[in-house]
Length: 383
Image 1 (tube, helix red, strand yellow):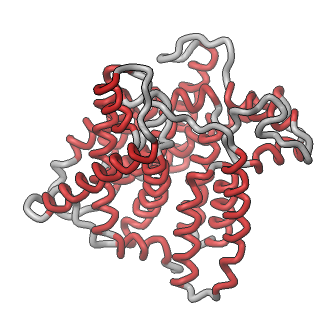
Image 2 (cartoon, one colour):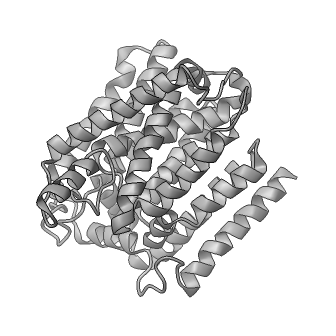
């Protein structure tokens, strides 16, 4: 019965995405080109020879992903005709993932409402319409989480390594998970040698990237508040110092973390999680995706479509079997709506969404730290 429900819901969601692809997107309208980001990456891969400087010498100076993607395009001979098929596979991946989260929910109606808010949101539309590589990373992180749940730790770490070589913001998750298993399973230090090679490749690729987005319409992480202050003081077409803005954003982040920590000592703003076995799947999914989103946020690279990474922590939070009241779910529901529907290029509304992202990530950070021992147990259990 569960499989029938899963397939039915996944089919409905896939049809919803396919309808938009064929008839026009709700927020974007009809577009002359779909899957444009993936087309761009494939073109860059096809232009570069194995010995060329693909970051600058082939008309791809705006390329800012890992070199592994281009190598895969070259080796497998991926062309623009295959982009459409890959874009549809992204549709299928998102449909199955969100259907699975809804089916396994402990709060069916609430999770359905939250799921629909997410699926109709501009970030999901943007990432799928563009077929951005972040969609692939989203799917691979989810598969890695499922592998951890099935105690396939080696395969999960391998997939996370692939993710890190494609998109640098998943590197902190790879390091954290790899070291966690090394310590918990008493592995020797040489088991972590592969991390040196992954780090080295990532450093070389990052040094070769000529451009990362750096203004208020292209990042939504910690440094964004420095951009807002710069705008208020000096007006439009001015940009703040990225380092100072980053420090300001991190300071605000920790101020709000401290606020929620102190608030939790006098008001029950957090659920009580006592049973790891009942909550293992939501805890693993929550921690993996939250770690990715936090990495994006603190690096200042939380571009609009990367808001999909906060979608899984939100949904799995609602799926937790908890003790005590649940009054905090309605404020979280409203926060989810504001984050997903205002924190992108909405001009005057964007600061509202960015402020609620700050609240949301601070709230989840304190939850993560309060439940760290249970989360580690959920991640590392071998039974």
